[in-house]
Image (tube, rainbow, N blue to C red):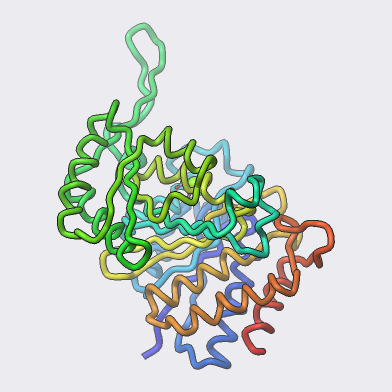
Length: 359
Ligand code: IPM
Ligand code: MG
């Protein structure tokens, strides 16, 4: 039976990069026997423009019935002044929470071909291979109460709540330990247990769950130090696990170590291996529609989808090898271009990956 992929391009460069990922999927269907059907829907600002909601019911239903979701990016200048409840970002957050995608896997891998593109010294980043496991449906992003209230003296006060139940920490801990078991068996849990009770509990639960994974070496680090260590000596990390907000910040930081945020895919998983797959970067409205964006993160997100949700490891590897091939051909979009490379646009990069798949 064929599997169903919900394709949600979103806003800005989301549209053009997802087009390239769809080309790759079409090629896998036609030439490699992949049995999937794709159905497109709107999310984010484009959905708001169309229907007044960043996550229309039809989109949510499609995402729910699909076996996997491919997402481009959401947001843009155009929608920045909207009420927070209908901002494009709410479309993304709504999908994460409605689909219970609590486990966000964000690899930061340095392609040797791009070592010189990093802003850090080559010896600091060469060989880098980190996996950040970010809790995605809890913490301060979703905690209640939240809002902006007016005090008696008429001054306004903004507030959010950092909150985690033991069960929420436990389930992300298991994902992180399982991930570490498949890698170098080292897990670093990031918290701020010296100041925040919520993360003190986080640490306690991590230590408890660790007893079920005696082979994994668990360590702990405060988030401020982790940020510093990521730029000082990033290769000390194998798997990092952290809460929603710390993970948001640290994963951008880790992404930049690799030279370009345009290269990194991500997976957001529920407890049944259903997932939403998206590039780590955003909608980049400044370069949208100019055939400039790097589609490789989205194409690599398809590889993660094949591996984790569609049970097609072989095809995942094929995509990863094809990306490796185009990098070896020195093809570069503007974000990873340095002198002497062959500069290509979004669409040409997509075509090159398809050719490499077929070769
Ligand atoms: C991310 C993004 C989102 C987040 C935004 C777009 C809501 O920054 O996926 O990292 O904060 O989680
Ligand atoms: Mg982010």
